[in-house]
Image (cartoon, rainbow, N blue to C red; front, top):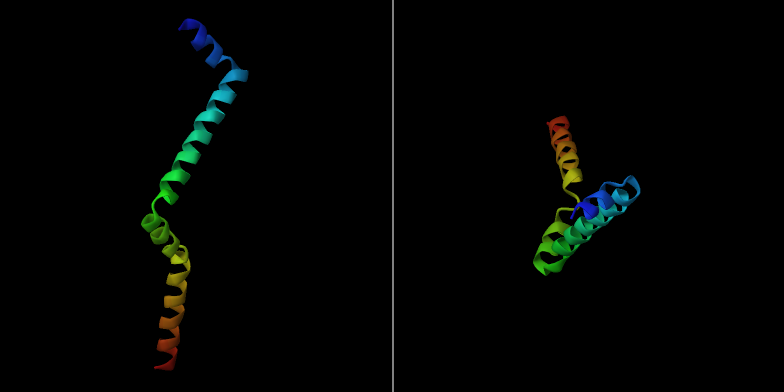
Length: 67
């Protein structure tokens, strides 16, 4: 066990271990997001949310100008 700890704490090897952990986490998140058809469609419907607010504000300003 001590040999494994020394291998991981070596700076050259710890970078590989960190890369594998982060890559595994990334792949897990991608699989989670797109594994369910309904979840995938729901997330795709959220794609333009940041732009919806700007459009509604512009419409509100146009209505105020017309009044």
